[in-house]
Image (cartoon, rainbow, N blue to C red; front, side):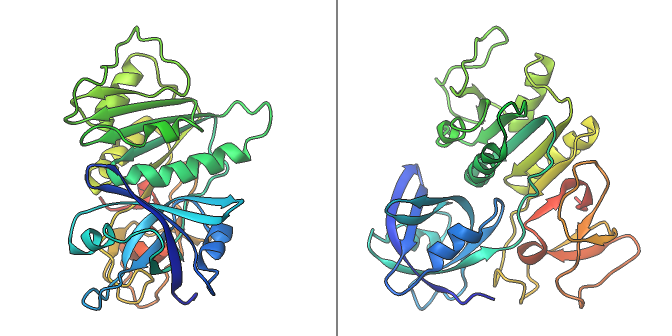
Length: 319
């Protein structure tokens, strides 16, 4: 396993209330960021180690983007201040050194995905979908009619929909509380790459409304999703009802972040172990267990989110 190494903070910018975009570059004598940029797959994460001696456990953050710029490789993470650790992280200034480890875990299977790819995200699960969307767009060949549609759910005002619009054919957003954004209407002439927002609802309310209005094509569709567990459960149920294969990136409380502590296990439906974490044809397939000590039962198995995931086929999870 790669050893943790230092990176240099290029930017630590508050992009919404309590939400920060952290951009990292290689620090002197370290090529950790270069390695992550070269190796990372959408859906993977990195462990961030705080500089305070009282906070030994790493904080796992999904990779929001990797950039091979003229100024050198850049790693982009987006996080929210939710506790003492992320509060301290928000105080780190550009130029400061911080230790990281990655890329960790298994990401999305990006091929084949079908004609209509739905990116369904909620909250801090939205930024990692930007990385996935860009990689999918980069793989498309001239004349490919694959459509990328983002359905994004926010608690307050949207802060990341514009970035998704760079790579998606359409972006639809919804907020639980924000107002004055411009409510979606059936007759609205939506312009490509210009996101708009529906107020007062969840992302699954948005999906249902778009289907009802004939705005969402589910022909030969697949879903990549990332967000809080209640949302992912709703996405899994909706995908099953529509016969759409879905991959979900799970959130979990990780102790170590690399499979040693067995603190992030989840229950899954056992299936024939394979190398891939996804299957776009709808059959339940599953990654091989990372730890032979994990208990196996005829109807339930256990897997580690940090090492076997965080991305799993939605139909494999015991919700």
